[in-house]
Length: 233
Image (cartoon, rainbow, N blue to C red; front, side):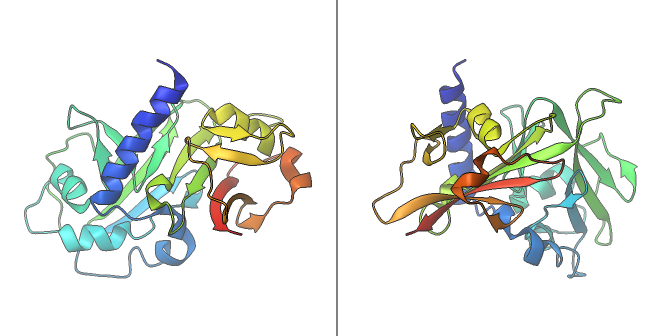
């Protein structure tokens, strides 16, 4: 299946998730620290490597929680996770998608959960983590995040990929197949087929710090986050 078609499918999933009230993953620092602050429902953590990406999902779970609810029903009704057509396979968690090298693994109170019908108690602790699909594989994640901001929020999502040696900002952008660069191979022109308006531009950040044009060949490290932000000029 062509990569461009796959990304259009992905965009459709993101739009549906946004309409259903899913929150942006890019509030990780501020919102993630409060994911367990409320005590009226289970606590929640979303882990990618050593990074916590829960965003506001803890609040979503608390608001959707009711006595006797199953794990599957809680994740679906809260909007924290989106599922494939089979209703059981997770496509994304808090708008974080995985490349084929990764799978989602769920733990509740320290125990790995394989039964979706497991009941969730009010004081349970739920952790969903990205794990290497091949058992025992030594993979480190890097994160590609698209931030459509207030102008194009339906574009906002993140994508977990495996770190590879000599991975640069440029190679990560080109390898994603959803980003188009200008002829100079330095400027982002479109992301998921969206071209900025005259008062907009795609900006690059690495771990929250703006990246200059000269940084396009910067080498990335495990756990780095490359963000593509739609900003006003």
